[in-house]
Length: 119
Image 1 (cartoon, one colour):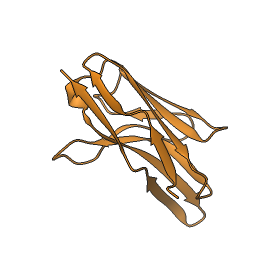
Image 2 (cartoon, rainbow, N blue to C red):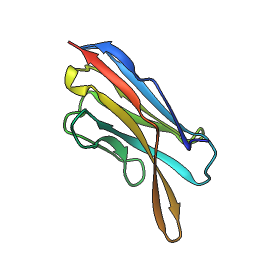
Image 3 (cartoon, helix red, strand yellow):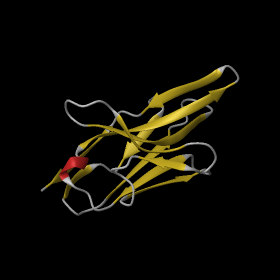
Image 4 (cartoon, one colour):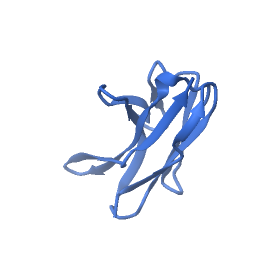
């Protein structure tokens, strides 16, 4: 069973909105969904938005003012509301989660969800 379940990708016209959701499946204990990264064809995976310490969130410059990251601790989910989408936002979006152990931290990734923005 995959550790993270992503949903919400799809095709949208420029200027439209999408909401991505990521939930821990429960197959791995102590896993905390933290945020979203994306990878466009021919490019490296990059941060979109992620929670850092506490409730603070870090956003890519391209996401500021358009995207909002939120989480539901009770459900162990994280969501990314994306507004004013443009074709440059087209990419596979990956949920990132972290598991915190005494010896350190381990990263987990979702399978990815495609976001395509048409002009």
